[in-house]
Length: 239
Image 1 (cartoon, rainbow, N blue to C red):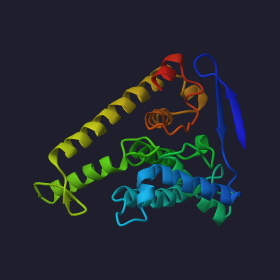
Image 2 (image 1 turned 90 degrees about the horizontal axis):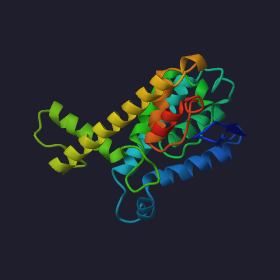
Image 3 (image 1 turned 90 degrees about the vertical axis):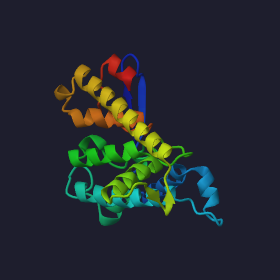
Image 4 (image 1 turned 30 degrees about the horizontal axis):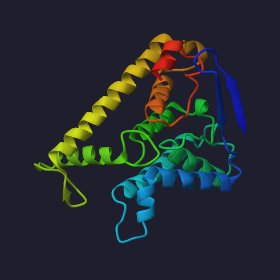
């Protein structure tokens, strides 16, 4: 189904589409195309040759799997999202959300009705984003991989981090940390602005919804939990 909402001033019209979970083929081909776009076109074409698109493809597969499982666990008994569905529809809706939260911006359930734990997990997925050279946003999966492996190396007492048996250069580590820092600052300032200038509580929204909106805008995901609709003109400019 689709819906059209009229907003005043800066945001004029917002049109959103949510495929029916009973139309399983729609869910799966949308998730498949979104996954291809999140890995990047160059890596998609290269996947069948002697070169393997690593680590982006591996990390993407891991995030999709973890996202699907966590979404099912968090929303399994939520009457406003997954509870009324059958097993097949629950798997399809969870897979759809896991994929599109990092890339496409579609949704298979009502995002406003999701539990706070699911929204926080979705924030993490959106912030990580897709692979370099892809159509998705975020700080990129390779940036997270570098930061995680750097932390692992420090914990294990090693002087240099390694990824797939290759040493990670110091300038790559510094660049990844700088991207993470700038991303956190950008999202933080935008979320605080939204919380300070918009009537969230009066509309049943919380700071988590504001952060969800800020990360969605930062990562160019395009999903919304409702904060944009009631935001002030200044907060919409920030978004």
